[in-house]
Length: 435
Image 1 (tube, rainbow, N blue to C red):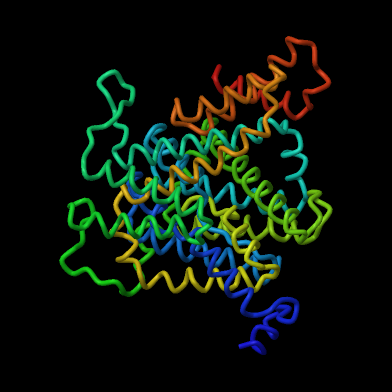
Image 2: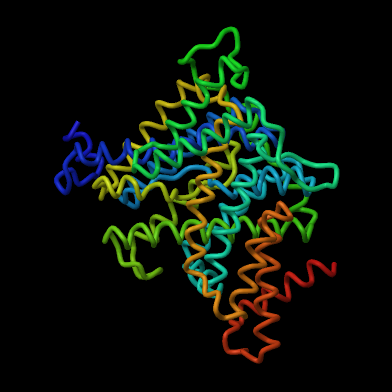
């Protein structure tokens, strides 16, 4: 095995094989909740749940292998939390796009991301967005994800006044609430794979209570689910028709992908001392961004939403992972997971509540980095954070946050703090609302 991996281009002498293997397993266990949560969320948009499971595992494996062989960094990729919520609940359910049209937007975004990476335009766009707004976007997405989790677990339900209220305590909501508590306890004790274990435990406990429904022919192992119902099912009609709103959707997907990827890569790499944290000045970061772009494009072909680098990769780095060998093992585990689809597909919404809520808690950490003392920074950040969950739209939060930032800075004569690109984006978004 050591000779084979060496032939494949891995520096097997840099770190021990065992360390990299354990790091890869740790990363997989920590992020494996995506195999349960992602198909559940996108199936709400009318997509085939079994095919989504295969698409999730295959896109994660292929993108992570690109990271392993091309970037040679210990980062894993999979369909992104937050962006999948935008895909299912905003684009399809709220805005009325078909999932085929939304999938075409993901493919276009992936291709654009590849071009931006090749021509090094990504840092120009991202650097134009104020730091506080970047943090607030992370927080807003976290709150939105938690909101979806609470609804899936029936802890909160829709009320007659078009708002939400506390749900009736039932087996589903009680198990969901206990799952959040269990997951929090395991995370506080630094248990690797805490979210995965919590999902599995709640799923098992839910069987006798009728929350988890097992089919009569249930088996732990089966052949992989077919991708046929969702693979290459693109509808480019709105793109060809030059639909302005559709182009805004593509931009929103691209923007979220850029921020997600850059934040995770730079933060994780810098903290581990792997690469220079300055964007655009390190070849490895550029290659990692390309792995992300290729992953999104390939994932769209498989039939899934945007693929991005997972912040859970930090768990593998913490375990000592330092090379692409760590991400190689993560990809291997995702491939093996293809044969356990019955186990993941029977997982109920109550079981995934814990992952959604606790990932939301994790993303809330960024709020401590927001400058709330300066009102011209605090207000736009607040607009982003509250608009996302209240409108069930990540894109609306981003748009209104950017507009409010430019407006309040201009009204207080702080023009120097507004970049030219921010002016262009603001005009673009205001025209969107007018048109």
